Image 1 (cartoon, rainbow, N blue to C red):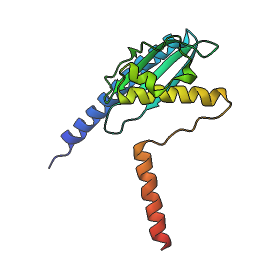
Image 2 (image 1 turned 90 degrees about the vertical axis):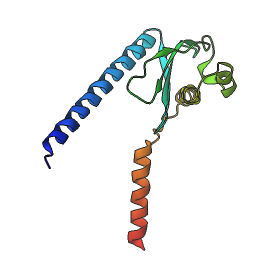
Image 3 (image 1 turned 60 degrees about the vertical axis):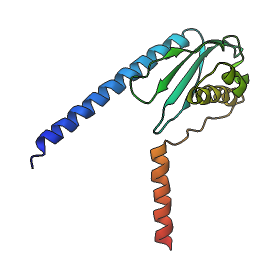
Image 4 (image 1 turned 45 degrees about the vertical axis):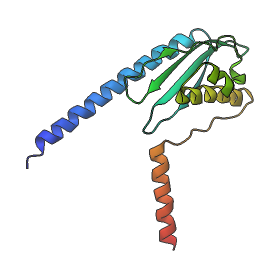
Length: 153
């Protein structure tokens, strides 16, 4: 069995994934930069392991009121930033679940918006944000704990 074509195919797929991820990050940075030109930016994210994730970004003024918002949602690198309307003029730290329901946002976008609001409140009160581990990291950590327990037994 000749593995060279399989290795070449794997390398091409890896390079294509890298390129598409780079393009998505470039698109995200352009959206972020546009919001950053208007003021500070509050960001929240909702990870999705096998379902759509989302990132919500709000340009805010010096008092914490939303000037403009945008979001990215999807499971692939083809997700693009879209305008998030309806939050303009609201205090970013006071956004509630009901506000998101009124605007008929999807669950991942709602989670991202609420996290952006929470992140803003934590940072403005002098707190520090804690990064939640990714699903794969949580699985590896659980496996490590299980292995350690079995070794101690």
